[in-house]
Structure formats: C-alpha cells, structure tokens
Length: 78
Image (cartoon, rainbow, N blue to C red; front, side, top):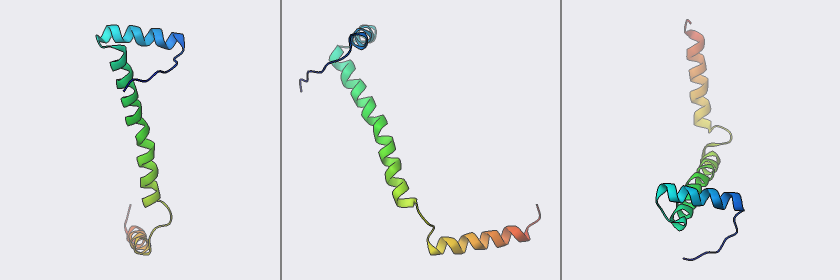
C-alpha cells in the first residue's frame, strides 16, 4: 500500500541516514518503525483489559482466603 505522509525535515533526514546505515529502503524503515510502535502501543491496551478483569474488590472467596491468611500470620512467630 502506498501512503503519503508529512514528516518534519529533521526527522526525514535522520530517517534517511538510518535507512542508509541499515541498508534498507526508507519505505522498509518506516514500515518497521510503524510496526514497532504498534506492538509497543498494544501493551497498555492489554494492561487495561487485564486490569478490568482483575481489578476492583476481591471476590467473596478471596476475602475468606485473606482472613485465613491473616489469622495464620497472627499465630506465627516472626
């Protein structure tokens, strides 16, 4: 897919130098950069979804386990 984008001159020049250094085309460099960014950007979304699943108040069963653990710790010597 061909896409036209606007990039500030300093970023364009730096990307051009990096592409030559890496011996890839500018298109390959930009595609790799976007791919890396998207992989990085997915992290917070996964975290957000996991927080939604595991966040909030403990379930009733968890409260029982927590109270039992606290009672055990009170009886233990440190």
